[in-house]
Length: 197
Image 1 (cartoon, rainbow, N blue to C red):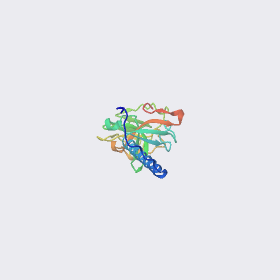
Image 2 (image 1 turned 90 degrees about the vertical axis):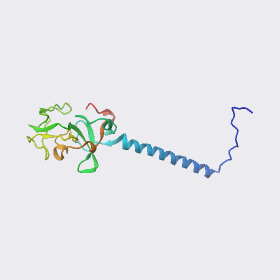
Image 3 (image 1 turned 90 degrees about the horizontal axis):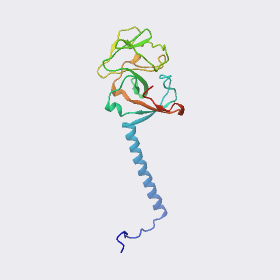
Image 4 (image 1 turned 180 degrees about the horizontal axis):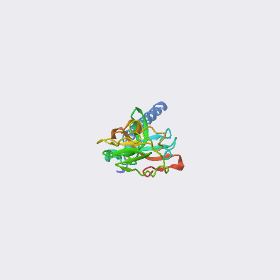
């Protein structure tokens, strides 16, 4: 006998229904595995989002599609000017997209239509020149500076006249952040990484 050949009983031919049933079971098992992998990615690694509305215009447009990554903020703290996805503080079933303006310990003030962080006017190169910023219920124009707590972040939409943000409902916590807007994949002409916007 050739030692390189494995001998065994010849397989018995299966009926057509038995063969079809085994393929269905294999297909279902494959779907379950892929579903579990997708769920793990969705919960812990990345999530797809569609921008609805113009609160981040001109940086983001209504109908843009993004990938939000969830890993970096588990390892590091958010930074100023990061574009983040967060839970709507008034309705957690909705996600918002905003920009971080101030970090824990920073002071924020709006004066003469400008944002001041730690006493200095914030340079916002991502906005058109002379974009006015008005205050809101929480942070009124020409009011006293507000200091961020140990785990508080102040977020504002780039479209300053059409954004519900921390000026109205106050700072958010790190736990309210879904993740960092990482990559825009639609429309194709705007495809690219978002960290430098």
